[in-house]
Length: 491
Image (cartoon, rainbow, N blue to C red; front, side, top):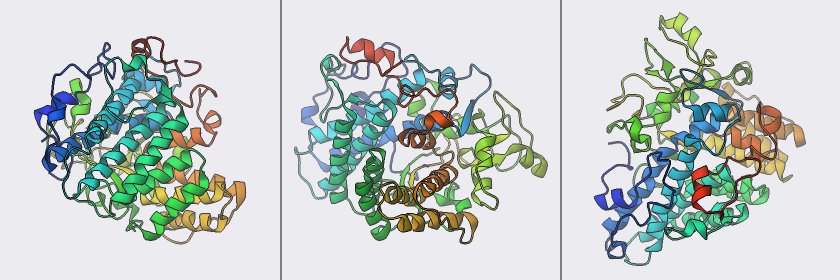
């Protein structure tokens, strides 16, 4: 199996870390004391910590929905699907008419909090047993907690925060922590991870010092802490082992996984299948099947459900001569004319597909082929790091020359030759934002880039300023809190 993340952890963790299957009656805290496991008797060996860490990594695989909705919510793609009622939650987010009653948004809340709970379990007992290298496992756990909390704060704003396990009933007493407090914990966890991890992981797919530096820089950028972001990202660029892959075309194929450009990847495998009754149980990248070509017959690709369809606007955002366009966007009509392939059309058909993350032929795809695709999610690429550093240097009024250098390093790869931006100030800010869009299209970042830079209302149809910057807290959580948590404004 190519991944470190797997299902081999013991039944203890299956029970302890159970995740609700979209049940309308379960709070994310309601599972806490359903089981009478004596957790205090665990964590007696390195193997115990290792198995718990596997459980903490496992929830990363459910973040496929974060990526899908991060694109659908933006101006990059339309929801698509079979019809306007196919996965209603996706359609509502696409049209910016989502409410606190949305099972797909609730999945993000539930699954990210399940990840938090798994990491908190390890960290609550981190001092129980000593062994050589334990600080590495603790560093990984703290990175993962930071990652899950980062997803929660960027989707929902203020969220409940705790550094040990949540207990049943605490939803009525623990407040939603201010965004600044959530980020303070994220920063603390990532600094620990940076100090205790190496650039080389103990096993393929596990967290590294570079991943922690990149996520810390991103967290700083989301808070407009430009000087802090510039320092940590510059250190990563200058001293880390990462570089741009020469051939952009190979990044999203199997040979591009865990390569020199990968700072942090969510690992997927098609060796163990899952079903629609438990999408988060899939070892495969569910988003790949959702992105796939409807009723496809032809070479190279497999069929899928035709969600997350790129718009003509994002296709037109690519400049002439940009080699990334054909890698990122599949023009299905042109492909069919070239290869003789056939396909069907569904809701909001644009003629384009997210080529980075659609199913390829030749994968094992055990079980339902649309749920177990093995394509890893490149959560943080080195190109993203370069563009974040460029933005920090520019928007922080620190050094536009350095910002240009990092921006143009990405552009040179994109065009196969120097294609430099020489603008400064606000014009350079716009150039970096445009570059992020075309470099990272299909990777789930666009909506949050628009929100954090204050441009979402200008670019996203239906976006309401003062409301849609964050998503609603699921109605079930508001109800379970018994008035302790207030809904996000205007929902």
